[in-house]
Length: 145
Length: 145
Length: 145
Length: 145
Image (cartoon, rainbow over all chains, first blue to last red; front, top):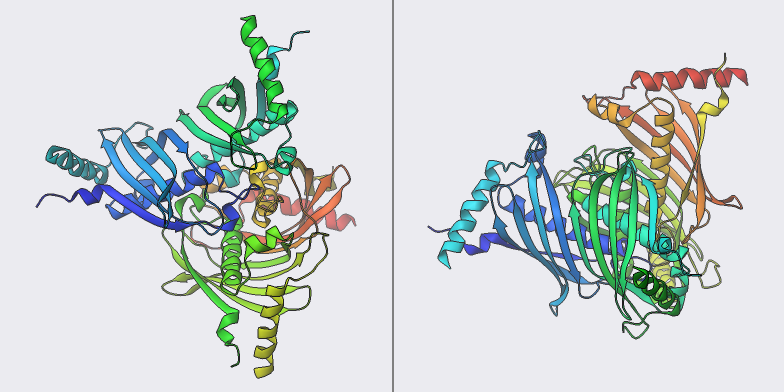
């Protein structure tokens, strides 16, 4: 059976918490990065990559580049969804496309392109096996197109 | 007297605080955005733009795009400097080039290009006078070259 | 119909996010205060007290005292519940008893007693009507005992 | 030579950063705990207790109780000082008295009593030698009185 395309998309619903608001009553730019990171970790976990395991084995996931466009703002009580797509995955680099949309109207709040790698205990880019598995899935998906 | 080029550069020395470290013992990506923002506000304040005034008059500074390259990491006890240059300033858009360097060796940690605007109380891009003054300074500087 | 005792108790399930962990791999003390605040706001909102309304009318809820006992720690991926009881409510003072328990075993992580008030636009303690309503409910409950 | 009483007092000057403000334009309660923790770490470091060393040797400092009274609020641009006194130090428990005062008028913002311990790699309360040294200083001080 071919892997489902769905495995490389992921969505997480969240809700604004008042302590995340800044003095202008909107979510601060830095907090959006927290939302994006939390969603990436939930995606990885759902696909068999456990952060605790990486940590114990000396691996450190690092972001090397973040490109974020802020289109609108989240405010108090807003519900929103963080969408994620694993866009590419080479031997030493991953790229996530992510966006945050306010619910229920699906209004685009930010979109982001997040590039990163995983360093081993020597500080060298090196993907553990769990990541390799994601790669094979991605390859199948692109071949299907 | 011509305005000094220095007014459009700005540097702020800071120090890592342990509560800013994540479980990997390094500064989390989102925290760097806090450092960058704090430095922009200090720069603006030093040039006569007071955030409290903007807020009271209904202006909201917003970032529309952040492009950040993460080159290395800050760790516990690290001293660092955040350098800032106001790279361009049109009638409704500003661009800051910023970088964070670890001291004393001046090692590059991140560099960033931050684009933004200021919205008036109607939600329209509109720069208050204090920002216009920055623009004239920038124009002189570029003419000098 | 007498108001239900349940209206003065409230529980909110949440989940640890990795960006909330500190370098020791546990939730930092300050983050627990965020969890407690978010739960109080959700409780108030569920009982007709809207923070946005308070803000617009010049009211500022403030905590005057926090007593927190830390019994154990939350770690990565932990699910937990924040329980809240509105313990007392005079004309100008509220007291919340709160606890955080890790799920599914209901292990006590912290318990807290949070005292506060609401200031009006002149900076004086003054409870808006929505809070007065909570008080009548609490009075009924205590009379029932 | 008798150890100086001064070694058990410590003060750290800091400044409010705009990203620490909440929607009411004041410092959020949780952020004050960050200020208190940062000051404790700087005090310990100044007295020979290095957090990095503790971590590497499997020690985890933990707060067991925080009692905080909030008297007033810090706002944008405020300078402040965090004062600290190591009030007591038994074989397995430390107590810090801390206060935050706004400068230059020295207005009391919060005072706090922070109780804690240090756990060894087995999760048992156990103070490393660097902490024992602090204890001897404290004993001398109290004998002097």
